[in-house]
Image (cartoon, rainbow, N blue to C red):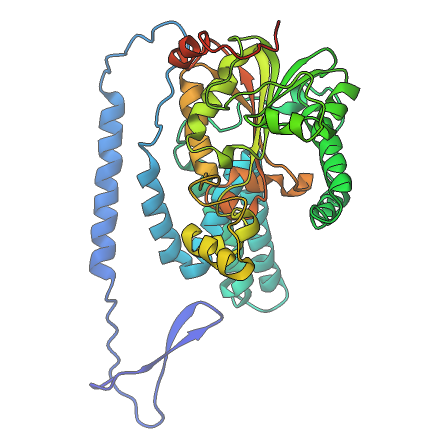
Amino acid sequence: MDGQELRPVRVDGWQQAFALPAGAGGTVILRFTPDEPYRTGLAAGAGCILLVVILALLPVRRRVTPAGPSPVRGSGRSWWMFVPLMVLAVVLGGPAGAALLLSALIVRQVRPSWLAPLAFASAAAGIGVAVGGRLTGHGQEWAYGAVVQLAMLAAACAVAAAAAPSSGKPEKEISVDDQPIVEHRATLGRSVRLFRTFLVEQSDPDRFYSMLAEDSVRQLGAYVDLNRARVLDVGGGPGYFASEFEKAGASYHGLDPAVGDFADAGAKVAGMVRGSGTALPIRTGSLDVCYSSNVLEHVAEPEKMLDEMVRVTRPGGTVFVSFTPWWSPHGGHETGPWHLLGGERARRRYLRKFGREPKNRYMETLFPVSAARMMRWARAARRAGAVTVVDVIPRYHPWWAQWVASVPVLREFATWNFTVVFRREGESVSTIVQEDVARVSLPDVTQ
């Protein structure tokens, strides 16, 4: 007013106003700074609408879709779409927007059907609070409050996550619920009991291994009927696991390169096979179940072992693989959690503290195998038509926390034991190894 800038204020929660100074009046000049860009944007929008209408009216030459299954598209090509989505979320809501979008993407990964209800519920909650504020005499104040803004931001992030392009097939292609055999309830009580048992592995091995074997067989029985099933336990030995598998009616055979040591120690080795997990001395397609528990991280070339496990399993059979990811709390085994600072450093620290080398020596008998590496192999095997992914779970978590295994990066740290269950499909993915195995003179458990 008369060259003096007036102090801006907000009236009724949203209306713009300016405070006039006391005293004599004067001429007030209002300039709407965004007016020109606003009108330019309206004109550009009208032009885009006109262009869309013109394109919709133009005749389009249709492609003929060939018969057969549709190819999987978008694998690895559409990840960049999440960059502008994240930028938009940060512009709209700052760190809260980024957190809400990441949460929505996690929900999309583990429960995609929840996104639409979440978007609707968030929007409804925000509108309800805003309208309630208006009806109770608060004007537009509530509409600009944190509750309404966060609710609408959550709705926008849920819609963005639902609309984002897919990266291809989901990791889990069929649900275990389609083929239940034995009920296996992954409860919190079970997780607590297992954790307590882990604490007495050294002091009370009988209690530890007997409970672990019983739980493992029961868990595997949720995916396949073990009665009369021919089972190979890669890396398994005589004793607890053999007893539990036989109780379930399975024909159990353990494989280990140290079978001779078991016999020298007085253990029963009937049905055991001496051999390497990366070159199984087993006929192709001769097993109903190929099982491995906490062995993959001890193999220098885990992909070869996985190829072999698939090769020896018959079409329609089950492959069960469970291992400890390197970045999990127990990834370094007895050298943990110092392995998180480096495997060699953790090994040297153990040697200084105890005066001896650890049993699991980094890059000799213990290797940094990640969940991401396992899933890369799984996707390649699935594309080759060798397997179907039945389930991806954290082995010892309760059922309500099993979504952790479906979230990349998080599963590396938050899954004590990462488990993938496959169903064997198609032909072998490792024909070269098959030819080599035919010349191995080790006993064949299938005879």
